[in-house]
Amino acid sequence: MKKLLLSTLVAATLFSQAAIATQTIKANVNGMVCAFCAQGIEKKMRALSQTKDVYVNLKQRIVAVELKDGQALSNEKVKAIIKDAGYDVTSIEISEHPVAHIKAELESKAEAKK
Image 1 (spheres, rainbow, N blue to C red):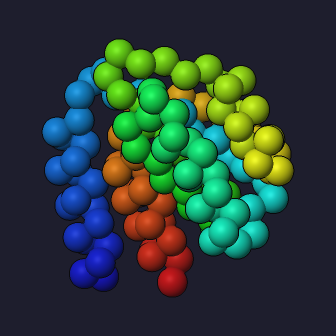
Image 2: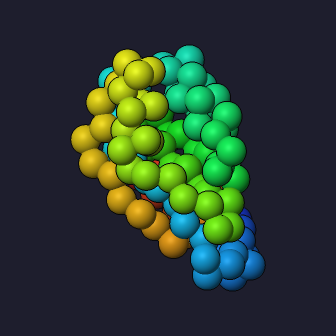
């Protein structure tokens, strides 16, 4: 319970500090089955000049790529990078939340299920 409260508090703090211009591309990915898979995708996404932060959640099969202020990255580019790594993108969406917020939200949901 303490972890859940702490995660929620951290998420709320980070979200309040985030700029309105924050843009995060959130992709649902099939085929990721191990930490090595997640690490490979994260490394490729972090190598992009537009990338501010990356979060890969293996259990939820989500890749979140937060862009630097004023930067753009097409959904097609994200899909192509993930496909080249050997995985399939089942859906993609744009979020105004920073990666830290998405991470805290997913981890608090996982903790609540325990």
